[in-house]
Length: 294
Image 1 (cartoon, rainbow, N blue to C red):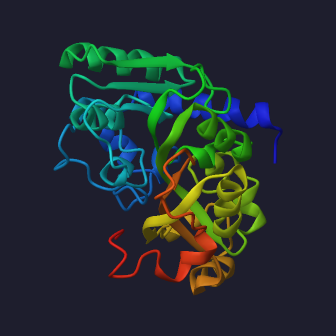
Image 2 (cartoon, rainbow, N blue to C red; image 1 turned 180 degrees about the vertical axis):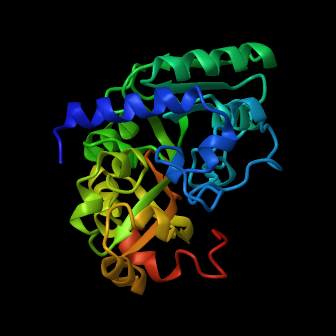
Image 3 (cartoon, rainbow, N blue to C red; image 1 turned 30 degrees about the vertical axis):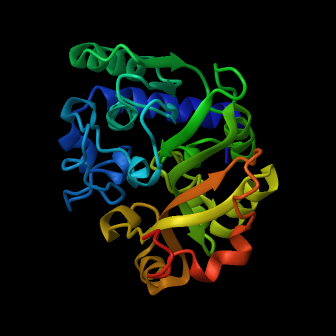
């Protein structure tokens, strides 16, 4: 696989093109980035259309979850959205913060920033702003966010540990995050791991689920839990571009699990009443009927 900067350039190029497409075109492809499957649906995306604050012009069909649904955003909060695209998650978050809150979207694709700013102006949202920058080096100060959200973006960043460190830096003490992302259980075939399109398509850049959660805990986040999890199935006509017929059959025998997960975690602060549990201590209950997370 290419080096970090080359991978970033691949993603920036792909998502610049995506910004110029309509949602229907994006929904026909693997996370909006590959040649369309003949099964015309997005294999990652959850439906936002019934969500309060949803804006159709800002929905490019690129997410893999609904992190704002689980983010526990309160009126007056400051929210940062990582990889904000055309602004959809920011506008949903703004519905929760109200006019007294603030929402900051960060994206490193100029055309996405332009598109998001136009959408914000159309909506008349003076408390939603979009900043150009990398999410592994955010253009924001320390300890300013009550909540961080992100939707199918961390898997596109080569240095995920650095992004998680940045999330910790920008959150206030007692702040928290809710992030939807793609993770793996088992190893992808080399043909998928080495392909630039599959990287931009949110698959090849994904890491093991256990490693993902360990990176979060290692940074110091507490109460780490999976709020939602769903399997992702790659259609055979996409797989067949990279794998032989026999390899496709093997892949589909569930040797590898590809999942969209929405993960929650808290930055510790002064409130001693918060239980200090790690994911490893609650994993068996993280999505049980009594946990209230699913």
